Each structure stands twice: as structure tokens, then as C-alpha cells.
Length: 294
Image 1 (cartoon, rainbow, N blue to C red):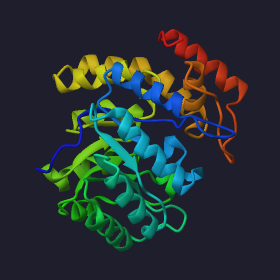
Image 2 (image 1 turned 120 degrees about the horizontal axis):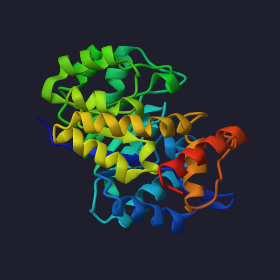
Image 3 (image 1 turned 90 degrees about the vertical axis):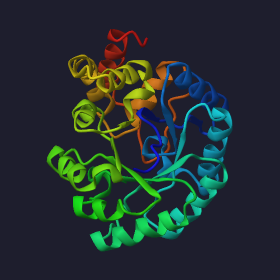
């Protein structure tokens, strides 16, 4: 079995920013909050971090800053995926050089790829990477799915260590797990399905939810790892209304509103993302109050 990057909860962090650029002071405070709350790993510039509207220089700078701020206390996973393989190679090499512990590579979006193309894409990235690669399948956003046979073939590559599975299809997830065995770690990419995936042998979750309730999200995983699936399921159900609020509009619109309400920077989003609708905001803040976040 390959090296396990992390077990438990990894926060796919929002990127604090202002109209003038990145807000590194807030990012540093947010990283410290996450670590103090017991988070198991941190993801810099994933989808939740608005990677699509960051410049290449901003992406690289945020990853380097996160690695330096974390200073080895938890693994740092760098989002290096785009729909251009050459750009992914460049971002991956940069992230590895800056000390990231792993890279998270989403399937190519819009131009997409055949399954043969996905094998070529991920093989090229893994061949170039000095750190473990986490594949990321989220067809609702990319229009591109990593099928179980494709994942199984890629799982033989020594640098491809894991899959972030946000297919939302448990049948496909179970098939993937059955075909990969212990060659590949599986992480939930759907906060609402974390406990079911842990029950199938998943290693944790790369989470939007844990931006807001990292301690409770970690506790849910810990209960499952200890065999207390009833306790984990209870927490999953308790947090489900908040999860639904966090996905009431396109991620990271609600997450950005939530962390701003918690005191972490401005609720600033780059276009084409817009601000959270008033009705969704009221429901989100009410649920955060119910859970003791505000």
C-alpha cells in the first residue's frame, strides 16, 4: 500500500481576498484556526479556493505561503489542476518545489477528455510530480468522470496515491473501491456522504464543511475510525442542514459568506461568482447559530 497522505478531515480552504488582492493576514489566521481545531490536513487553492480566477502567480504564492505558515504541523495539499496538461505540470512542479506534501488534480473541465485521455493526463502529471497525486473526479462541475476501470488502471502508478471522489454515485464509488483495493486511498468529496464512504473503507474527506465546523467534522471521522458508526452517523445527520446551506448556491459562494461571518476577512468573490442571496444567507447564518458557530 502506498503512503497515506492523511486520514480524517482536510479543509478545502477558501481564499481570503479583497478587491486589491490576496489577504494573507486573514489566511494566516484562518490556517491557525483550522490547526487549533484539530484539522488533519489543509488544501490550498482547490475549487473552494477560487483557483479558476487566480492568476498563476497568485496560485503559486498562496501555496508557498500556506506551506510556510503550516510549517509541517499538518499535510498541505496543493490544488494544481487545470484543463491544460502543460499548466498542470508547471503548477505541480512549483508546488512540489515549495514544499507541498501532495497535489490535488481535478479532471480537465470544458474540453474534458476520453478515458484514454484521462489516463494520459494523469500519467503525465504523476511522472512529473515529486509528491503524491490525488486525482479529483467531480463531474457536476467538470462534465468529466473518472470511471472505475480508469481509476483502477491509474492506481498502479507509484505516484498516484488517492482519489477525491465527488461523483455523488455510491454504486460507482463501491465499484472503484472494489477494483483498486489497497492500491489507492479514497477520500469523500461530498460532505453529505462522508460517513457512508468511511464505512466502505474511505480514508476521510476533502471538505467544504470543515471551513466552518472543523472540530465537529474531525470528530465525525474519529468516531467512524473508532468503529462508532452510529455516533458518526448522528453527527453527519446533525450537520446535514449546514451542508445543504453551504451548497445552496455554487461553492464557494456560501462558504465565503460563512467564514466572513466568523470574522475571517471580507466576503469578497471574484466574478463571475456573485454574493449569496439574502434568503440563503439568513438560513445559513441561522444554522451556524444553531451549531454554536456564531
